[in-house]
Image 1 (cartoon, rainbow, N blue to C red):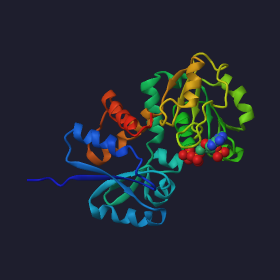
Image 2 (cartoon, rainbow, N blue to C red):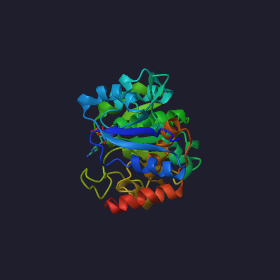
Image 3 (cartoon, rainbow, N blue to C red):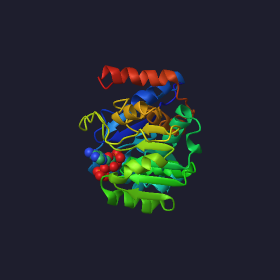
Image 4 (cartoon, protein in one colour):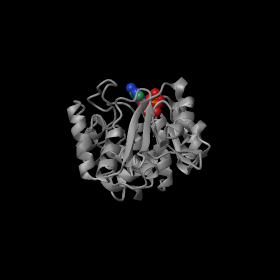
Length: 285
Ligand code: ATR
């Protein structure tokens, strides 16, 4: 008797560059699951009708990426704690017909550091560069893992201020002119800006001197194309421990896969190699 295939999606606009189908496809094959994970491009004005129609098409749920994360938050009838704190949803599933939304970005960020820099959360003080949508998930992750002082530096000071006001005690907002002094205090330095991201103007040199950072400081970037961003190159040059952003992408996929397909997958070296091979093929490395 043929079982009906389990279906999940990733939707965004555009969606063709998403590597999520490769990740979930790898796990489906690895676990021998009769299922599919499909990239579906949905324009913003069609997003709400997409949400209404996916259960009828046999989808158990899926991932949501730019620009739909806030709309998915608004549409979900129930939210997990991370989505509530961040105000954005990247994972959707159904519970007795109710549309539920979660956010796994903060989980993915922390799990990547747990794996690449164990003990990273022993520090009290973090410096977060950038205050965009991704910055919100990072600040939530840092608060959840006990950082008592989180300094956010952003070009547009009001965006950093909004984030600091949202997350409250221990989170402060600063302009770039203060970044140099903040580097010295931080046990963890996170780049969430698009500076140095492929296709966003190739900045060879990241505009921050890291030579005064604490010797035990950890530096991480959420950008993974290129894998060694100008920020990470600079941090390596300054002798800091670095963790690249690809692991965050891999780890954030774990909870969704478990929800839709019923098996908790592992982030392995083989999965990472599989994605790196695709990035090389696409000329992204
Ligand atoms: P996302 O929501 O995915 O994080 P975003 O909202 O475009 O993306 O945010 C990108 C981040 O990179 C922002 O913090 C942005 O600063 P502004 O809020 O001032 O726009 C930062 N950023 C982008 N280009 C930058 C540049 N040339 N110099 C400094 N910061 C930059």
